[in-house]
Image (cartoon, rainbow, N blue to C red; front, top):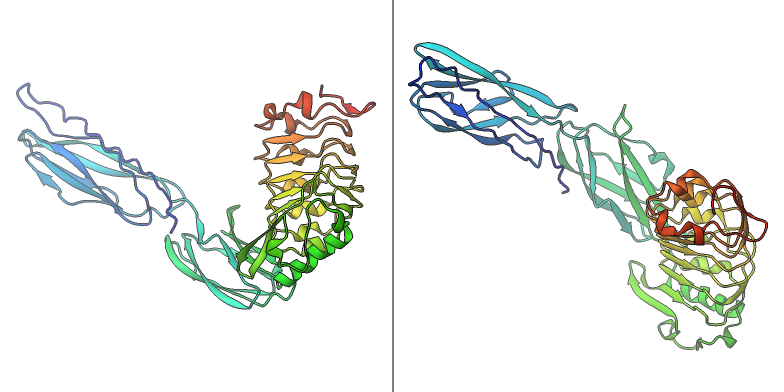
Length: 426
């Protein structure tokens, strides 16, 4: 179970009771710093009391502080126990440290500062992958506030048996039941668990694989072979042999059996329109089709390839616009569509690709102004927009991005086709 780290700094300082004569020495307490891992459990730490024969006493003035020894007349090690702080703000407690001098009681009030417990709803696992069959899974849930599920109604195929609300940081079980997925592609549920009256939300994600099979993978690849002049590829496929022997095809064991996870036909001589059936490869992670002669448009429903991390379609003769649906492919790490004949604007939806590391759109006929959302992508280390027909003012989100200098904008962003360019980028 993931732990919430609570750092509670408890400072105890005893100013020595003022001397009544120069021959007396008086007790003192040391400074203590304690680090705690779980604020929902009481914590105990030690305080050293140094005494030189003078009587002393300790009295907590707050109920959530307690000591194991309240008085003495010699040096001692005292245990101070602090109860759990389940509040949303830090609290300060008082502890009176007293000493008796010549029959008179003197002392100071010490302050114990304890941090608040952060609001939290955690899951283990945070992401759950299940087969296409109906079933039930148990997820560990850690929480310290009442919660509600904001969007469960969006997923009628999913049922959640909620753990009782609690103010304590406890580990509970959450029952997740799901219906059979009869579609080829997998489906995804992003459930938002929210703490009422706050903006704090924790998301639990469930992927349920579709009914796509090894046979459906084979049909998709045969469609690509027949539609893109497979007989003349530089990489030969013998369709009478198993797919595991087709060059450029990688297969791995998945929850749905042995499936195609990577297709690398870079520079293999593909000639024709990319068939929509390529999107039936529901377990595909890598699609490398660069440096071929593909024509036509990018399939509008390419976002059915939800597990794809590397999408390389560069160096072809693809036309039309960039499908807005690509913005739904949140697993994408690298997207390279450069050196084609793409037109239109960059879809605003590409700003949803928060995991994107590289975006290559250079040497197309794209126009308009790149959306500000793309400039805000937090992990985008490589960006290539040059050689298009972009105009207008490049949004400030680009120059403010942490990787702006890495992009080398004077080379990879600013230069556009003749007659085009940004008014604030050189």
